[in-house]
Length: 242
Length: 224
Image 1 (tube, rainbow over the protein chains, first blue to last red):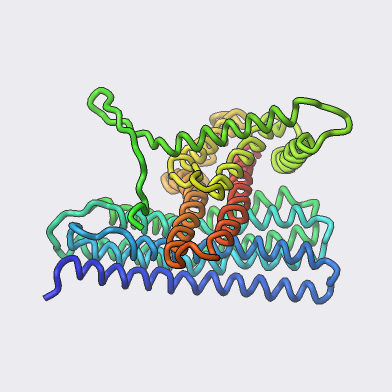
Image 2 (cartoon, rainbow over the protein chains, first blue to last red; image 1 turned 60 degrees about the vertical axis):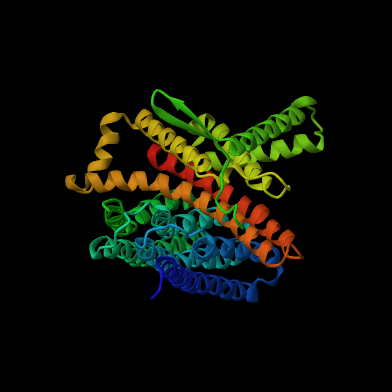
């Protein structure tokens, strides 16, 4: 027979694997897409190597945030002390892994799209590179919101104090909260990324529309994010009613 | 590895409740504030037409952030909010860089700092919106597109505070946890300086800028 502690440790290992494994998918795709578009822009503007390389690296660092969050949750799962915790913690750990891992997939891809179009845009309009990189940072920052909600739910699941006895209903609602926030985070991340990417490339075409474009992008992203917020509300309800 | 997530706290009982102070974070915040005051003193001590190096640095900060604020808010409103934006960026950038120095920690590593800055930005943005548009037009914004969307619009506004502050907190705390774990795994050889440079200096600067720009953009959405 396995003891409670062994079950919790096993669940922590599994949650850590799910978290960092799934989170790596999106961040890597986004960064690769950015690098590809930067190469494309360099092929016809080789003398802009400094600007394009700088924008590419900054954009990739922002897109990497989702992957770093996955890594942080898996390190917290692996290294936090587990003695004397109730058995229900095992279910919470698996939920935390799903919440962080799945929600990072969309946000990594989404944060990569504006970074890629910013590299292209600098190739098109080198004189507004400052505006383009500021808009790119805002756009990809907002595109990451759902990964941050996933991170919030994962932290709640990790550090919530749980009742000692194990019954099926709280156990399933812990895992369910993780899955709810995780899947809910995929779509809004990619959608907001598309909105931000198109805004950046539109400013590159017509730089005087910068402030109008920023406002429209933010309003559109706020509406896109509403499905992610539904997931956040349901996940919070599931976690906090235990 | 045992000090993962350990915080030195001072707990003071007040009328049956407990007030908790995170002592190290308060100390680090004061170090940042004193550093910034000292920088301000040095930059403006000898103002000249041909500026010294520190005056140039101060002028670059002020110029850049006034330009950004004017782009987002328009000339008149920008005069009011640009000092806030400039100060916010300088505070955050120095906070995020502080962890590079041994024995010092980033104040932004504790959730209390980013969350209070996020709440501050939220209140300033909504105050600016009410002042500019009037209470009635401001309230009407919540009932769009249809009246029963009001609760979700409200939650959406509050979620902005969560996302802006957890973005900064997650990046800085995540960076410091990764530095700690990797340093432990490689016995503090070779890798830690590079990790510090990446997470402390590079990611720290980017995240400080993102936080500042988002605060500015939230104000501009409310104002326009």
